[in-house]
Image: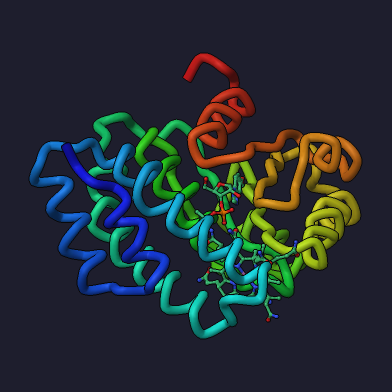
Length: 213
Ligand code: B1M
């Protein structure tokens, strides 16, 4: 029986050496990659967020924890992505303007790739204009926007509006996600869908490109 508490503790303490060792150990013990992610890495990060909120952690602590989580994620990535499904659609993903949080966005990208979607990653702090330009250049079917801050989620609306203004809104489906985002907000800004986590993002993307894929 794997002790996920210990792995969570590595993320909370930002111990990346131990995070690497334990993630690998969990895999060697036969634990599924998705379970290690959902029960070890992500809950650890949730505690970090709580500590930050409570004034117990500051930016440096959050950064070392994020680095530890990324190391674990890097080990799980090939397994989460393993898929023999042919690309079903192109998804352009990115974190909106003013926002540099990328762990959730990367996770969504990994899960989509693992489900047969082709991913174009625009990175973080992406302006609405850049999204419009990249969508055109790549011929993406779906745009996936991520925002982690209440102050940056408004850039999602700006991005939807930029596609409207450009006249290309009807050529792309837009889905949004991230901690402060809700279904109501997606409806309000004219996005096509909202997903609360990476697994549901995959379902949403499938629905947006036609359901049966
Ligand atoms: Co920041 N941060 N941070 N941070 N940070 C939060 C988000 C915060 C909630 C912490 C807190 O107060 N408890 C808070 C936001 C408050 C708010 O606005 N409501 C906050 C703040 C305030 C800030 C700064 C402003 C702090 C400051 O400078 N004073 C600053 C902003 C910088 C900026 O972006 N301009 C800042 C900076 C940082 C770091 C750089 C230190 C670091 C980011 C490192 C990185 O990403 N490379 C960081 C971190 C690590 C966090 C927390 C602790 C963890 C975020 C994370 O990676 N979670 C976070 C607190 C928390 O969330 N517990 C916090 C794990 C990840 C897997 O989850 O990103 O939610 P998440 O993604 C999920 C879902 O949301 C969803 O699926 C993912 C997987 O299930 N999802 C999508 C995400 N995108 C999606 C897109 C989709 C669909 C689903 O479709 C396209």
